[in-house]
Image 1 (cartoon, chains in turn green, brown):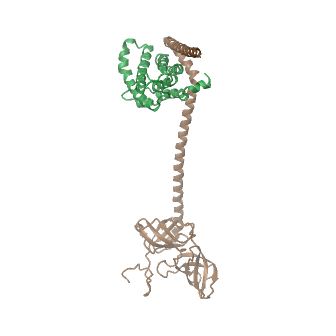
Image 2 (cartoon, each protein chain N blue to C red; image 1 turned 120 degrees about the vertical axis):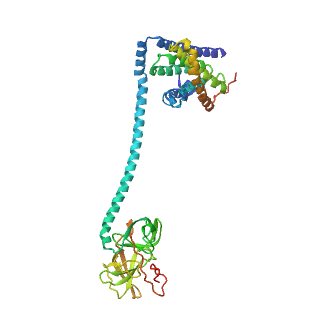
Image 3 (spheres, rainbow over the protein chains, first blue to last red; image 1 turned 90 degrees about the vertical axis):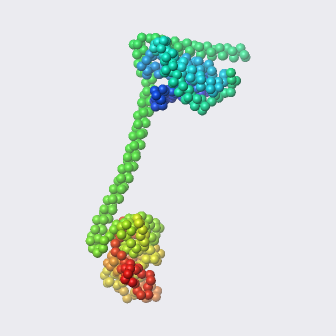
Length: 166
Length: 283
């Protein structure tokens, strides 16, 4: 990937995701409400995927997931898998190809959180039978909180292109 | 052209799929590995690739903490400098008081200390503001001195502050005597810059004489040191003489003064209306 191709992508986004990763660990716990935390990392990461497409998102997700795996006490590789899948999936909706409306972007963010948590749950071998309860009790409140955060972030950073909507 | 573009898209898409397969494979392999392999992987990952990041973050944290500490130290230093300045001021006031102690013992009246708050920065004369007022007993017409000599008199006083007229003010007149010959003269300042004494040709006042207050007029107590005659000049009419006087208390350097708590005595001539009438009821 040469410089010109790098310039096609949002360079600030490449730094934004690692910074969001640090903020997720250092700052976000302070914004916890009744133990529910938003995922600032996923907000920035989904925004990154919308802007840069699937390929950069796959690798960015894998790298960030690997870092999370390194410092987490659970099964190694679970975060890497989850972030990679989310990156690839959301990257299919690259804003240069498809225009996704504001509310749909927020909805996709919520789905991304649920997908991420679901894959992490399965990869961590916590059992498929507990997955619905986990998604309902733990993941869904966090997803709603994250969507709230994402609604603000997406309003601040609207899509750069005006591709035809669905 | 379209074919080329289609091929490029396919290549890009293929690259995506290869990347996805590679990362998913790695992720699955790591997650499916036994615990000891995962531990080794974590150790290797932390010790090699993440070590520079951790090192940089650690150094940044050290730098931030040092900067915060430096800021705290600067604040503490500023506080100490301020405290030092205050203590130096207290020490200086104490020295002034010690210097004034012998003078006070010779005075018949009580005195109260005051600080010069404002004064004319361009000339000696004028009106100065002192930080002692009626609550300290300071009243109109009282003499103001320092440990060196006469400084001026109180023009008016209010709660918390008072106005003082210096002996170098053009509107101020002080009756003085030569300490050597007891010859009288009138101390005045024509322009608020220099101080002069005017005396009769019959008065025996020479250069080098020390001047003290006479006490005439009742404003200044008798015997307060005023200044030294440095040069006597003849006037054209040969009736009066004029001499330049250097005040014992340099007006430029005085900061702390003492007000003699003594109301002016009545020295009213029957046809005069400009003198003080402090002894009310006796007029």
